[in-house]
Image (cartoon, rainbow, N blue to C red; front, side):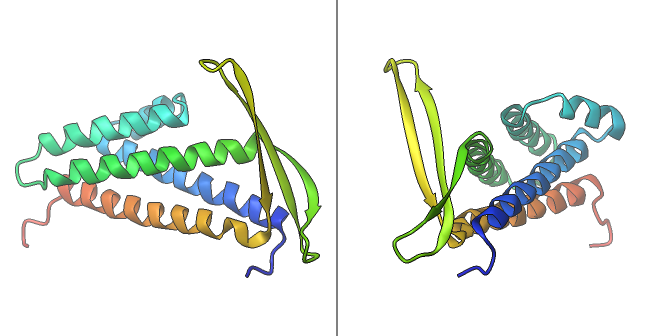
Length: 168
């Protein structure tokens, strides 16, 4: 169990997500293999989900252009982009929710998160509620850490493909 408050954990989640988003931007800049500043300008104009789609397509193209690359990497990268998309949805839910202090039946302080979404096809508004104790964020942190680790593996692979060690 965490010694941090739910407020603190919420902030940690948002900051950790920002680091993950910066890592996505960096891999896009690497794969573009051109004017880094121009690429950053273009990437920063894309919303998060568009960055993921762009990274997915660009990675597949990047792999296809190389001779000795693992074609299965495209599928693994795509899975990672799907996971990052789900994490982005979780982040959006967290950021766009309403919070109020909440104490559970054991007297532990936490947050009550409320978020409503419009379901256009169903013609209804869905009201979601989540009880957040500090340890409720543990799974989110695990998913963020795992995704960041996988993204770093792909980033290093892209660097290896761009700058192969001819001595190896």
